[in-house]
Image (cartoon, rainbow over all chains, first blue to last red):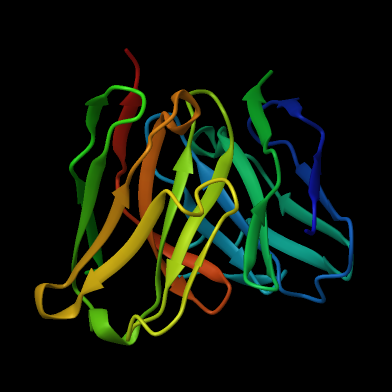
Length: 107
Length: 117
């Protein structure tokens, strides 16, 4: 099973600042990594897939990078609606795993 | 517009059974693989089970194998999760989610299952 480890667990920033979230895989997942955003009481929403492709309707301030085992989600300038929990996710050998999440909170 | 609407959640005693449903609309349901993903209160996301469009292939997490069964009815545009021998640790919000390659591109709003005596 491939384990995804996200860091930091909590990130405290102010609107307008740049956010950098990390996801590290225990084995290479090539570029087959997705990122999701989840707000309280809501379902997760797909943000990024194939490590760096934005999903439909996702603002350009969200970007993803990385390959192999190290991945980054960057939010270039935080908007108030971006404060949420973010998860990375992969599939290997028909087993899907998620990272434990990074909570992005208002400082 | 793609819509996924779960139903069937509720309170059940340990050892009991429950069947969740997910009604799909806005896309050709039979052309897509589907999944169930759950989230325990205050915890992260856990994938539960996967089924192809034709129901020919099914995969499930070890934590639910032998107890949960995923199925679908393409004529009714519906996905199901039959949950038997429920345990306290199965308490969670259960989401149905559409597969797009390895990712989940659309999610329902979730259905809460509470296992408690």
